[in-house]
Amino acid sequence: MAVITKVERIAVIGAGTMGSGIAQVSATSGFHTALIDVSAEALARAKESIHQSVEKLFSKGKLDNTARHNALEGIVSGTDLSLAAEADLIIEAASENKPLKLKLFADLDALAKPSAIIASNTSSISITSLAAATKRPSQVIGMHFMNPVPIMPLVELIRGLDTSAETVATALEVCRAMGKTVYEANDSPGFISNRILMPMINEAIFCLMEGVGTAEAIDGVMKLGMNHPMGPLTLADFIGLDVCLAILEVLHSELGDDKYRPCPLLRKMVAAGHLGRKTGRGFYTYTS
Ligand code: CAA
Image 1: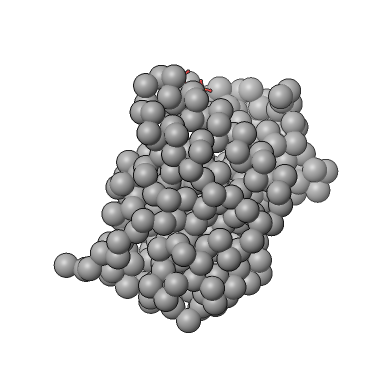
Image 2 (image 1 turned 120 degrees about the vertical axis):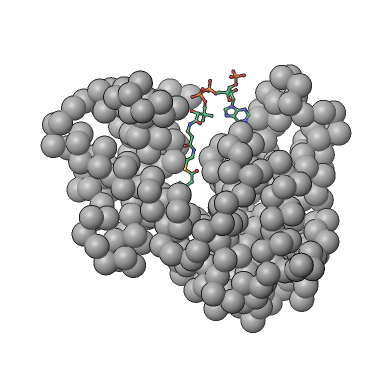
């Protein structure tokens, strides 16, 4: 049996949709939580979205008063990476950009406690390569949460080449304490989730580009015919078209198979700045 490191303090790096959701769930699950981002505006937006989500869950009786208080009052936030120095577990949820993540991993390794585990919420980048940017590769793991983090039950755990059994056991324990169900994936581009999801989304975009159907028809067929909660184009807008493109680029370049080539329409939409819900326009338009 692998020994489990006791985790009391969690630091989340990146206050975007995923980082704020992870910080929320961490705080409501009773961990001392720090949320760090280079942008003070991003931290302010995260505070607002955590507030809205927590109040919604509290009003439905899905959170008790302590959990609500922990998330609304207990999260320490700031722009200084050294806020992560005391953490037992650091979860990186910065942009899906490999050079940025490699630099963050090297910086976090230099300031984190020797016993700390450094996890990444990356949706496709190799955990083994992030681990190699540190001097603690056995303490690096992928913890891939799903959006919206407070609602989605899954965490995909990804073991890098040198990830230790103790690190896996500790991450598993933390996910369970957060009320999540875990499935393990090996360190292969896109892991399980995006290896399957992104080709489906990409194919839906090809169908739209080639005029196989309208956006409403493509999404309607997948919702009503396959019982998906959202059609693939709606889901792409929800995830962010820039994120979808970044993941497809990783699948295409690292697996070397043209079946993963990003659809030209996706590239065009990203080039135009139509990134989905977050910019108000993607395959659909959104008002706030
Ligand atoms: N916090 C609290 N509550 C939330 C919430 C949040 N962040 N987001 C949604 N909810 C609640 C809503 O308030 C609503 O509650 P009621 O039913 O009590 O009214 C409930 O969840 C359902 O929400 P909606 O009515 O707005 O819409 P919906 O029924 O379509 O559900 C959804 C929303 C849960 C997001 C659902 O559409 C869904 O499961 N979609 C698929 C999501 C998905 O596939 N996520 C994975 C994306 S891939 C990824 O994240 C990883 C990657 O690497 C790209």
